Amino acid sequence: MAMEPNETERGDAELIADHVRGDESAFPILLERYLKQIYNFALRQCGSSEDAEDIAQETFLKAWKNLGKYRRESAQFRTWLFHIARNTTIDYLRKKKHVAFSEFDTEEGGNFLTETLADEEPLADELFFRAQNAHMIEDSLAKLPPRSREVLLLRYHEGLTFDEIGEVLKEPLNTAKSRHRRALQALRKIMEKKEPKG
Image 1 (cartoon, rainbow, N blue to C red):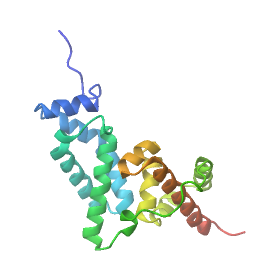
Image 2 (image 1 turned 90 degrees about the vertical axis):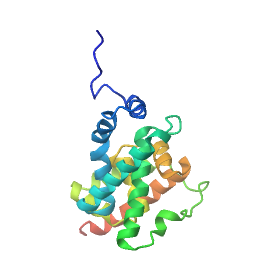
Image 3 (image 1 turned 180 degrees about the vertical axis):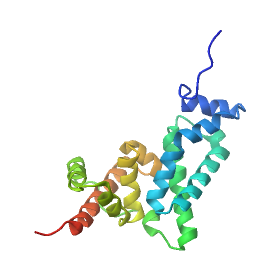
């Protein structure tokens, strides 16, 4: 007799298919698998554990309602989920803070043809090497505008590729790379101000 696959052996696609077929045990496994990542992403964006819990809860509620519309060929489930989390965070902050987050909405300037992207990773390595502790990075990230902060969080905290980041942000690959580079440069300026002179 064949053994039933356990939670860790069931992939996202299988769990989604099971959920759509009416298996009520499937979605809680997906929730448990990604809850911490989504919560941490929201927490670093909004700075409040209470708000992050609300955002995570709303993200999974939207995912649960729309799981039947999810198409594996258009994005990985994790990428699709982060896209929902990103939009939920923006909506939540708008309602709560009553601030127009124009940096989320408007396309950043810059010429992709003239920008060089070759030294992105050395720049990142330099920044993270110079940060002597995690607190310095977290504090510096918190000072960035939301659009800059989110691309760095997706890249370094969540480990997404630039292709995946582009899917989450619904932007072309070059736009995601350029935004990443500008965010690293902004982070470097903030960190340089923090460093003791001497």
